[in-house]
Figure (cartoon, rainbow, N blue to C red):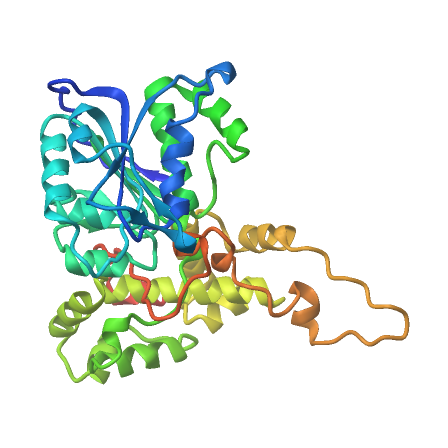
Amino acid sequence: MLSALHHPAPARKLSGRRRRETVAVLIFGGAPIFESSIPLSVFGVDRQDAGVPRYRLLVCAGEEGPLATTGGLTLTAPYGLEALSRAGTIVVPAWRSISQPPPVEAIAALRKAHHEGARIIGLCTGAFVLAAAGLLDGRPATTHWMYAPTLAKRYPRVHVDPRELFVDDGDVLTSAGTAAGIDLCLHVVRTDHGAEAANALARRLVVPNRRSGGGQAQYIDQSLPEEIGNDPLAEVVTWALENLNQQFDVEVLAARAYMSRRTFDRRFRTLTGSAPLQWLITQRVLQAQRLLETSDLSVDDVARRCGFRSPVALRGHFRRQLGVSPAAYRTSYRARRPAPAQAPAGVPVQGGPVDRLVGGGAPHPGAAVGHGPHGGQPQAGQLPGVPGQALPGGPSAMTG
């Protein structure tokens, strides 16, 4: 599923001088240029010759002074926060640091705009600006999978779902990292002007008009959050990641932490922003992905090595998270891989069967260019969380 349409709130009537086709892009110093350029390219270029209706673009500085960006470049925006009063759509493409609060003046301007009916969009880490303004309270939202646990922990009233490429909740929309911002902007054009206009724009940008597959979940990596380094739960989490081939549930993890199940659940969620049951299921599915990519093991063997009680349990959780069956995922993954080069006659092939099969040493699909934060490779030191309630079936659902 590419977008989450959780019964979005009805759009408010625009007040004052605001017009829906007037799009303000709010940029800050220190924000990456790629994310910032996405709404500029989608809404700021006249493509009426291709059948794409024209928007009016206002590039607004969210703070005073020249705005530094990627590669040491410096930007000067033609408008300031006052121009937001004319926009019916406001895009926050990125925020420079998830550990810093946004400027209070920008927060106030966003709140006022939303109160007056403007549609507010946060791309990637821009979701942190929307959350700081209180615009995501009680709403579904997403951000780059690497930052989703931090967003959920810092703003517990936000229903964070790191599996989605983007979330449309009516007058507030958010997207995952980098390329997902294009997906969301195309969705906005589709919503405003129909599928034909969005398809024409996608052709001009040479991107899919709709991506299919496992959403953002297919890129989530296995690693630990910075916050957990000195926490007593770190040892338990590390043990769980190292023993995914064993069948164990949250009760076992709670016992290893010398906590009651209730205390463990609360402590784990506070630390990571994720329910322990859903987190562990996600880790088992991620391990299954790796084995499907790098081995010839049968699905039954993959299920057993990932701690699932049966292949049926693996297939159910795998399809729920990635939108495809394990067998279809393997087929699709191998189809995307280049054929291994043939060694000259008499030259032995290096590596084992797995290396020859998938070209050992290549990155995980989640490390593909454009899917890491700000277009780079995923960084270590973050824990993927899947906030939400435990799946039906109780602790046994963890292993099937």
